[in-house]
Amino acid sequence: MTGPVPSAEPSTSGTGPEVDHPKTAIISGTIGSAMMLVGSFGVGWLSSVSDLSRWPLIIFLRLNPFGVVLSIVLLATGAMLLVRSWLRLGQKVRTWGPEARTATLKAVMAWGAPMMLAIPLFSRDVYAYMVQGQMVINGLNPYEQGYSQVSNWFSSGADKLWAQSPTPYGPLFLWIEEWVVWLSGGHQTLSILLFRLVAVAGVVLCIIYVPKLAGLHGINPHRALWLTAANPLFLINFIAAVHNDALMLGLALAGLYYAASKRSVLGILLVSLSIAVKPVTIIFLPFVGLLWAGRRAGWGRKSLYWLITSLIAFGVLAVLGALNGYGFGWIGAISTPVTLWIWYAPVGIAGWIVATLVSAFGLDGWVFGNIVHVLGLAAAGVIIVLLVIKGSYARIIRRLAIALGALVLLSPMIQSWYVVWLIPLFAVTGIRNDWQVKTLYFVVSFFMIYSVSDQLDIAWFIDLNLLVARIMAAVIAVGFGLYLVFIDPKTKRLFRRKLRDPLSNERI
Image (cartoon, rainbow, N blue to C red; front, side, top):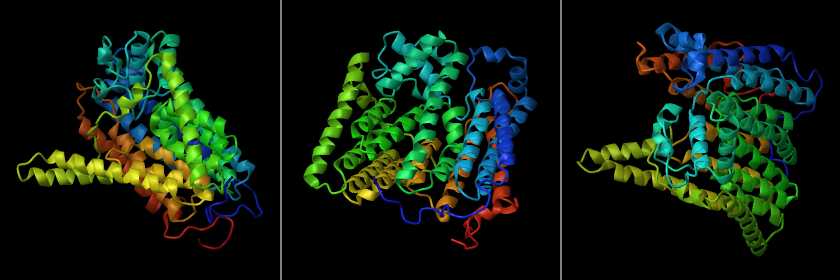
């Protein structure tokens, strides 16, 4: 399919043991994940109607300040211990061979297992999934109205921010929501477990197809798997937070692999199912069309295959929409204007600065601030078009990675799971063992710190201010992060100006 990305990572030739005692890293990561599990009992997202709210341990951890503080300490420390364990697992590898793959898979299973039992962490989207499933069962259209139409939705645990908003999810995920609520009988704990199993299906797809895609690019598949699947940001978002992005991404990667392996129709079908979970991956379609057109395709052939790819994909979506009776309602839902922004998104903060300056002159600043946000998305659109029409065939998937990266970076709102969309695409096309991998380390650390300090569910009547709790979590996580970068004798070497190739005595 494609040639290797030059100098993407160190060679895998050499002698010596493939993995140097990964057990300690795996065990420490498991301890970190178990600490997060216990911490979730105190500050994870738990609805008021959950049966778990009557458990003595959960009552102790949630209903008194000491229990809440203990939970925060466990959560923040456990999350950063997981980061350290991931870094140490990568350090212990001498040659990225089959034994490294085995160690990575053991780590994923050991670190993911406690998260399967955790109260939802870092996001309460799973509760919205449940209420939307109830909407479908009750014959309400989630593309026309928010879940505020469901009786007693407020006690369900779903975020009131989206109560009036139509769902942005595709028809396949609406079915999954309906089936989960039907199978569980509306029981929340069982529903969370079933949604986690759906997410794990996506994780398994990523584990299968990340190495395959890396192999097509001449990139070491075992290192790509470690960068992706054992990554703590991947695990907390797809298992602990139960995001449907896991299934979306897994299906998209599977489709991308088959498209790159000359099984384009199967690839398009899988990407279409990914879009039917969450339409973000519609950005994959023009790149899949290029893969199908072939290496020497001219503009006429490319245009033809773009058209055929679009017809197949939208044909699949039309059938799914017709079967559930909602048609293409998701298009209107995702096109609904959203004014959310976040301080660490470059375009988001730029819009706020413009809005603040304009407001100082007595004008409606956010009229201009929102224009900045729209311009950011427009710039992303221009970059995506340029990446579709320009570049070598050998770098199509890398171009897709950059295109999706532009969409994320130039959006006013950047969530941690948006970053997880990018990691496998860059990993399979090559993340060099220099500033590139160090950038990944810093990004993962930043979003882990932000996640543990931003998403805490603390009862209003507890004698502990939410802001104080968040500052406490941030201080613990930042302190641990600084320890990893500047003090820890093992991990601080990873953040030096130059990294050492583990297979040679040369710096790269």
